[in-house]
Length: 101
Image (cartoon, rainbow, N blue to C red):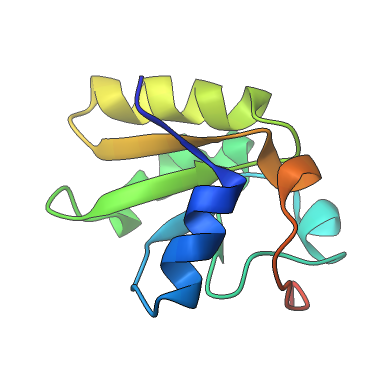
């Protein structure tokens, strides 16, 4: 499983890189704040919404601590998606957050 740290993601965003970030936390968790530009697809809905993802894109998967995102990465990899787990999740995130509306 490919991994990336929260700090590495923050650095890439600060450099102006365009990243496809999927936040697999529940809606109420995301409401407290998310990484700017992240798309919320709760883990329990991922199987039903993975058709929204493009297999030609690379995705960084995020949750609260890295556990659910790890599950999501394993699931999506089994369907041929290029995904990377952000280790430590939002608990490790020190960058800007936006409201999760």
